[in-house]
Length: 207
Image (tube, rainbow, N blue to C red):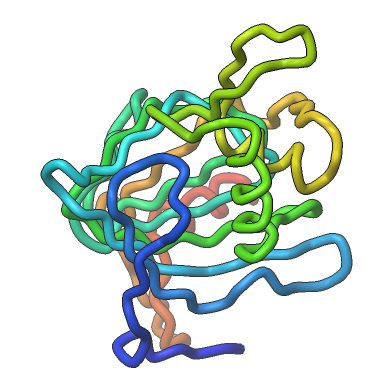
């Protein structure tokens, strides 16, 4: 188990930021794991006003969990309210997003994960032939035609040397959970609370 005192970590402005807005980050664990599975865990603080974060409707090849520590995040199809948990499955579309004056805890993992250093290098290379603007990466394709794609997909293709081809998503869209809506109970023989509804569901299945 790894325990981190986040009060001792500094807020670092995310640079480069290909989506826009000012986002500050406290990195807890960075792109590490077992073979074929890399992950990171971080806290992000989203600025408000003119520096509010916005992103286009998009999808990615990694799994992600989010917990709204404070504030809220508009996900396009719904809102992640303060205290809510969201599961963002790989290859499932969501957005457009908007988030300002909020703090979000994020954990993400995947078998072809891109580290911060790889992402920064790819962005620098992509800027030589195109531009990150208005939530897209703008460039010219091999036929000389203007092209714009999601920045995450452009970075993925640059790192792995092939286009990002999404797989079929296991879930059609992210799943949002409201922990405060669950009741809790403590069995007499145990010192651990657990969701009452989950306990009742297990009893029903045993019948």
